[in-house]
Length: 437
Image 1 (tube, rainbow, N blue to C red):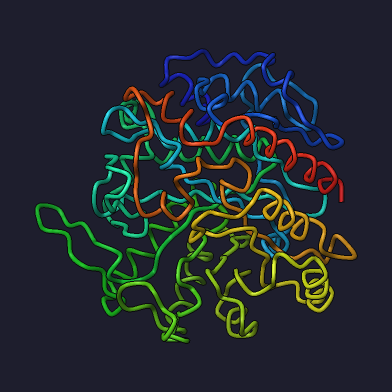
Image 2 (cartoon, rainbow, N blue to C red):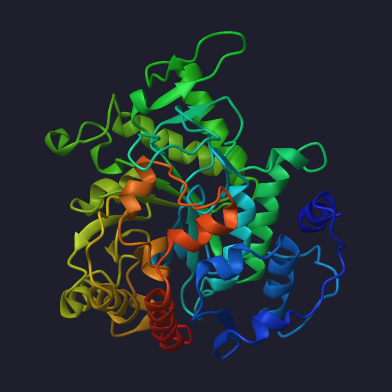
């Protein structure tokens, strides 16, 4: 039995699927590419996982409805170098998790529910969802705190399984955490998406859990820790993830450390080459895309490191600048810098029109579709957040905005209302024109 059907049974649902009427009422389409738009996220997040699976099957671009989730779903095939042209959309799966009082849980289920609202991949390039959290965060994992109490997603714990914020541990006796992640990946693949996750490499931001002992600080000088890092990431790739976004990648090997804002030592250059090679080799997945934060000003350095793309080099507000670099780099098919609509350090304040202009540059800044540069979106670029928070704030803290200690209220209050719905429709209009390129 495939993992999607296992998940449905673990949740007490039937595995028989049905056409989803709600989805049919909210479809946007571009040829055979279909998704839901002109919506608010809570409309999806308050539905059941079974509703989400029905929705994704209803949206299947093959126009073939299966009454049971099929066993042969494969990742969208854009070749081994797909990451060179992809759009990466980071979803903060902790922020959209279920907030029950002071507890945070089931972020992977919320990630499944939001998938129908992510535009599928285009003819010529992939869209890839990046999940912000997989590993436990060091302080406060499984709990939400006040809006200004630190609960950073940038501090992770290895050798401790997966985050209480993300996995549904109430059903872990029926379906393992790894299978829950695999179910998410299969559903994303059905929807025509690639998937990945964020990781950190600053040593003091990583703890290693040891049985019956205090956690210890990670060290790149400890061969056992390096092996643990590799193997933890290989396990995730084997659940179906094909992209890894690497925080602080610019500074690997001590490069331009005067601008480094992480905490702790970073891996050496040749050491990171080895790590990326081993993740590809041990997982058996040659198509992994490694995207590096701000790893863009020395193209040869990052290409030879093993990265596929990086952020924050090209001016995203200037369409002509994006098109210029698309043409300049059109023969570079292994590595290219990307265009940022926004990043995880975004403090908010950008107008809707500014965001839409950056999306236009990202989706259309080229002469030929084969030359398109990669681009980077945050959840807020599709679904605007409430005005008193921001992408970065939700990376550093984990507040519940619920007015009555229920998940539904949190989801309603986390995002903007009618203006957010209208903006989401405008984003969808841009994707309509891009998906058949």
